[in-house]
Length: 92
Image 1 (cartoon, rainbow, N blue to C red):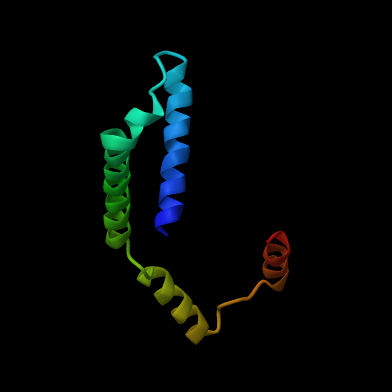
Image 2: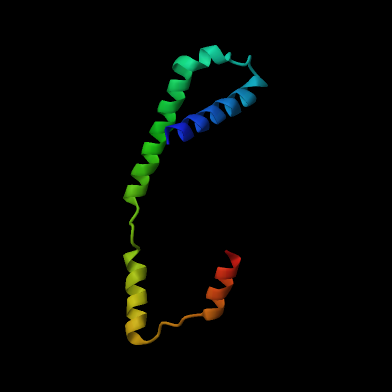
């Protein structure tokens, strides 16, 4: 997991230097090993934490939709469209 994160951060550093390299001087790798790389990791960690917090606030189960489907099944009005299901399966 740490190796994946490190590779991702290295890619991001490369992408940043590619974009910034057109406007500014490229940053030497020896300088990147210190605080710059660590600050990028911290920034990415903050973003991940924000996304996790956002995901926690979303309901895991859409209770309104579940109730509608339950009601339709109980009433006998729920219809299965086999053609639509087959089409979605084939679409992947």
